[in-house]
Length: 320
View 1 (cartoon, rainbow, N blue to C red):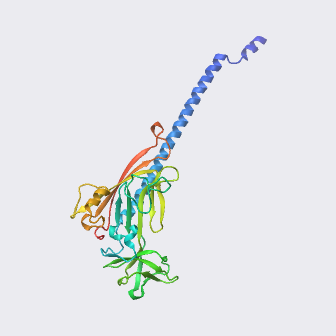
View 2 (cartoon, rainbow, N blue to C red; view 1 turned 90 degrees about the vertical axis):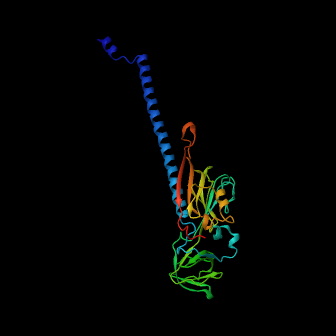
View 3 (cartoon, helix red, strand yellow; view 1 turned 180 degrees about the horizontal axis):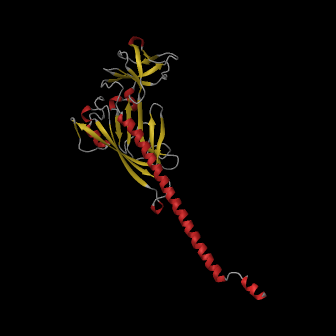
């Protein structure tokens, strides 16, 4: 009886223990591989989603400004500029055109080539957009040119001294600078000589921005937007490694059959201006090269995507 009990309580043999350990190790390796695969798939999807968000942000914001290039709330083609020294200030020079392209080697006002944060990456295209129709306009209620004052429809106009504005009515528009906002009133004082503006004309802030590829704080590249009125650059979309811009021209009222780069456009325009009515740009093709932040591609490389968006310009009939 004693021997039978002793035999029934004996443990695993060494071979059985080794087999159990091998089976457990195989199961553990399978679970680990499954976990690592799911983790890698999550990182890939996360980086792809981030790239798509960057592209969506870039295209939406750029397209909004490009569509309105050269526009004003009144739709008049007669635009004057009475800001002192405006011709020497690139962003203020409306005569150059509402839209102005720069090739990869062309200097861009507002920033320089370099490797510091916010500086432009050499070899990438850039763009300046000027517009008078991107901001909510105030309504002109009274204008007496002899007093150099304009009255608007609210005391909460938010206009301060030094701001550059555009006033317009059905026949003309003028760019000028505010000299005094006369706190708490509906009256704005300005510098320069303005013609009489009709009642119910519009008053709006002049918008001038530059779009370019610059270095971000994480050692990569991003799409930047430089606001000339503030003298500052803002990072808009990360992971935008390159930008290629091409322009469709209207030549003698017939669209060109192909898109051109900035250098080819300059060969067709008059006096290096993008505002010539015979050759003005009617559409811009924006090509963005996107790169993921993490090394989640094959061979431990970044993911790369190229996306294309075409923007048709409004107000092409009014910038001359």
